[in-house]
Image (cartoon, rainbow, N blue to C red):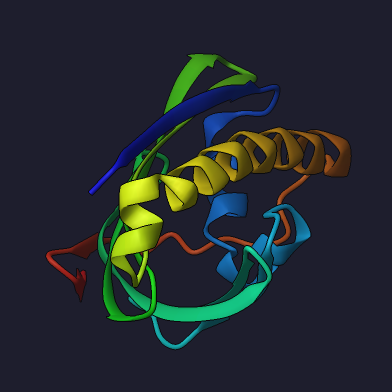
Length: 156
């Protein structure tokens, strides 16, 4: 699967950046093409997105989650495979680096061979990080938090 890596520094403490990132149902506010996100339970999230004019759906499972450190997921069902990890690094007291690593794969060989999906997702990830930065810095505080831990897909 093609891999995408990107990062951005945000001018908020790591706890605030992480807390906002755990608000999955708010992702459509800053993620281009994401139409809806439904958190089914602590470890399962259903996604609806528009990719190249077509609606696509998939479900991910959070396989690892460590407060203020990381959120890792894998796709368990759907039309798009999207596995990855987001990590949070404190740069200074009020500055955090958000790192994204994703592996993406479409539902057709044409999408994957031509690299169309990779190009679309790579561009969107960069824009999404920029919009997340604006959202969290302008808002001044996170809208919620989930501080639980997940290991091997199980809530601890």
